[in-house]
Image (cartoon, rainbow, N blue to C red):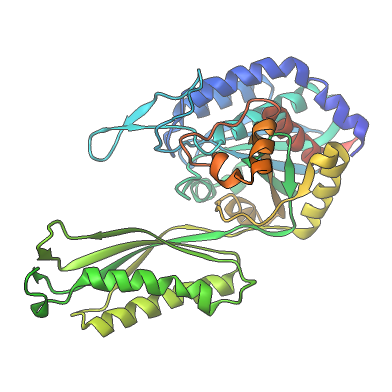
Length: 420
């Protein structure tokens, strides 16, 4: 890649910027949940076709893939996720979402782009337009892929199972990016582990119910659950080395409905974050060991049931690809290029390059107003005052967030494509 080539491709950004900003605000105002991204997918496919891409839609439900073949050369796949979250927006923005869907209980459920996927879609579309407009500057094939249902860990595997590998040319490398609560303009990548694996567990503890005034005649699953909550917190603090990152969170305890009735069962909803398979297996085994032991100590009439769901693979960047990207980002972004720290969030993107057997790298860009972030950092209140992904207040500033995301994708792709 040469600086001149990047400049040539990015020369079209000034003209594209107003259209991208309009697309972004419209998309933010019209979020759609996983596997229901029909409007989003339709607008994406329409634009890709207009720019000369060979488009396949409906992949894995609502996924969209474009292919722009531009002579001999490497093939680069770049992915954006499209789905929103069941969150009621509280940003006060003029383009804030008021969208709702009907929930499983029949009630209206607010929907919001609380994780920045609207940024991802817009940036990848911006990249796709610039690359189509500057075909004289590069050779090879670009494959922008718009994935559904990342939040539910369903979209990547759905696209793979729907024959993604047979619908696109095999890439030489795959990329993805995510907007995060860092200052807008920030770009960060790291080799090796980046995002954690995630496992959610539904643990059902069995007791023997009865009257609250006669606990001696019962086996109380509420007490059993309370002891499990405490014991599970010792897995990370007492079974892993202090330098091994992991998180065990009990997000919900569900038991009973009356103050004077001891119920028959209690349910724990547990979330686990780890960065390697050895630690992942150890923590999962330890959870079972602890809850089985507490049930036995309580005299439970049967062993607990442990259901595993909502799993995400770890995101582990290829070291060579990430190193090459880091050098390219440093050359383009200067002091705004960083080695990002480990993130405890999780993603399913890696299932796509794994299925295609290609190396990949995933990086983060900032989306918080730089002045706001700097003020919070000065006070030491970043964790309190800067909204994070999935917050009802999470609202990336439009610029320079979009410009940064488009530029990062362009720099990454042109680092692999043939340029002249």
